[in-house]
Image 1 (cartoon, rainbow, N blue to C red):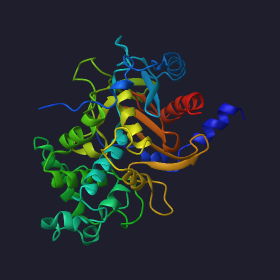
Image 2: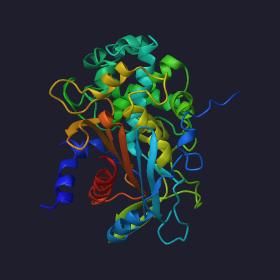
Image 3: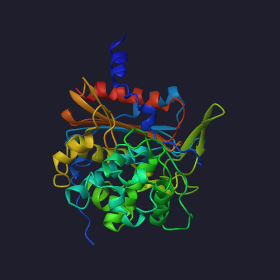
Image 4: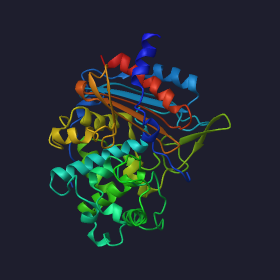
Length: 386
C-alpha cells in the first residue's frame, strides 16, 4: 500500500458515515466588524494557495459539474479553490466566492446556537420537552416528555430520520416548525429514547426550541449570532442561486450515466437540520471557530462549551452535530460531518489539537461523491496538516 493510500485509509469516516449525510425521502443599525478580515487574500500576509489544478484533475476524472475545497490552519486561510461549472451544459464557471450548499453540516451550527443559550442560562442541557413546551405536555406522547435538549442534539430522542408534516406552505416558517413538532411528539417514538438514530426531525425540533426561547425565527437567530460575528457574509438558506439564474451553482443528480442539473432544496422548515449555503472560505470561519475552541473570534463561546459540543455520550461516536474519532495526522481528536440535500454534497474535517480544518464540496450528489471528496480531503491533509 502506498503512503497516500495509507493516509486515505486513516481518513475513513466512523462507521456512521451514511447516517451523517442528510437525506430527503420525498421531492426533491451597525454591522459587527468581521474578526476574519485579515484572512482575505487582499489583506493576508501571504495569499492562499490556489487549488485549481488539484481540483481540475479530480473533476476531470469524476465527471462532476464542479468541485471546491479549502484549508484553514490556526486561523489562516492556507488554500482555496473551485473548478468546473455552475450548471452542467452551461458556460458559467464556478469561482472561489461561489456559495455551496452544506446540507447537514448545518446541524453543528444549530448545536452551537443551543450552547450559546445554555451559557446564557436560558436553556439547560437536561431541560425536557415537557418543560420547554408545557402547553403541549398533555398531548405529547409520554415517552417524549422526558426527552432532553442533549438527547435531541446527539440523535437519542427516539425520533425518526424524517417526517414531512410541515403544515401549509404559506404558513410562516415558525408556524410550520411548530406543526412539525406536534406531528412528531404526539406520536409514539420510532425507537426507544436513548438509542442512537440519526434524525433530521430532532434538529428541526431543536429549531422550535431556539425559536421558543429567543422569540425569533431560527434564520434570524443564526444570522445574528453566528453569521454576522464570524463574518460569514455569503451565508444564506435554500438554493444558492436564484430561480432560472446562473448567478450561483445549481445542484445536480446522477441519472442516465451523467450529472443532470436540478434546482431546489428541502422545505425551508427543515432549516436547522440542513438548508444553509455559503462560500468555502466563509464556512472555514465557522470550522475554525470550532477548531480553535472559541479563540477565533474570542468572546462568543467559552472553551468548556466546545468540550461539551465535541464529546459524544459514553460508548458513542456522535457528539452534537459532529461525528468524532481519532487520527494520527490530527494528533488526536477529529470532528467530521457530511451533508447532502440529494443535489449537493459537502464534507468537513476538523482537528482541534492542531487547529486545522479542511472542507470539500460539489454541486452534485451521487453514489461516488463521498469517495471523490474524500480523495480531495486526503490530498489536502497530506499537503497542509503537517
